[in-house]
Length: 337
Image 1: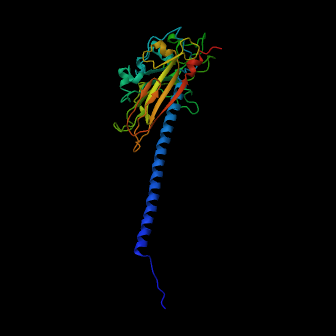
Image 2 (image 1 turned 180 degrees about the vertical axis):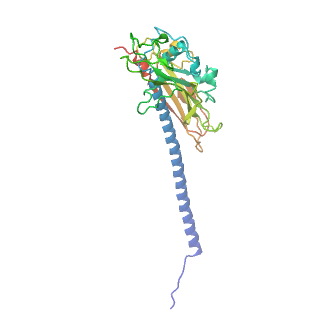
C-alpha cells in the first residue's frame, strides 16, 4: 500500500500565521517601548549632566571671584566704592576710581537684565525671560607662562601686585592699586628683586540666551562673554551649555563684616557698597530637555529662590538645581578668630 502524506490544512495555516503575527506584534511593541524608554533615559541623563555641570561651572567661577593675588581691597566701611563698575566698557576708559571699584566688587548681577548699560546690552542679546545676568571678576589663578598656563600676550590685560615698599625700586600707583597693563613699568615682589607675577585679569558675563545655534531653534543656552581682544573690551558671548532655561541668583551680604552672609536678596536695588559686601551667592538653575516627550504635558511649577516659573504646558521635562556658594576670597578676608 502506498503511504499517504498530508500537510497542514488551510485552517491550521491561518491559525499558525495569526499566532506568528501576534508574537511579532508583541516583540515589535516591546522593542518600541524599550526604544522610547532608552530615548527618554538619554534625554534625562543629558538634562541631569547639563544641570550639574552648570552648577559646578558657576561654582568654580564664583569661588575665584575677588582673587587679586596678594592685594587686599579695603573694607567698604573704610573705603566704600563710589559706583558699581560697568563691565562692558573698554580698558582705555578706565581710571583709578574705576579700577578701585572693580577690585572692590568682584561679583555683581542684573535681575532679568534690568539695568544693563548700553554697552552690555550689545553683548547680552536674546536674553531668556525671567533669567538673571551674572558678572564675575578675578585674576587668573596661574601665572602667565607657567606650566599649564597660557603664555603672556601683550594684547591682554594682566595684573601685577606691588609688594616692594620703602625701596628705590618701589613704583607708586594711583591709590596703591595693583598695576594693570602699564607698559614699561617693572613691578617687584617683596624682595624688590624678583619681578611680580603677571596674572591675566578675568572679567566674565554669564546669561541665558533663548536659542542655541540658530535663532528660533528654541533651545535655551548658557552663554559666557569674556574681556579680551586688542582693545581689551568685552567680547561677543559664546555658548557653553545647552538646555539651561533660567538662571536666578540671590546674593548674601555681610552687613557686620565678620565673613558670613547676614541677609540674602536678588540685589535688584543694591548700591555699590551693598555689592562690595556680597560674600555668598545662591544659584538656582532650571534645566530643560532638548527634545519634547510625546504625550507629556508639563503642568508643574518650579521655585527658583524667590521666583516661581511655570506651568509651561509643553512637552519638555524640566528640573531645578540649586547651590550655595561662598565667595572664598572676600569672605575669607573678613573671618574673625
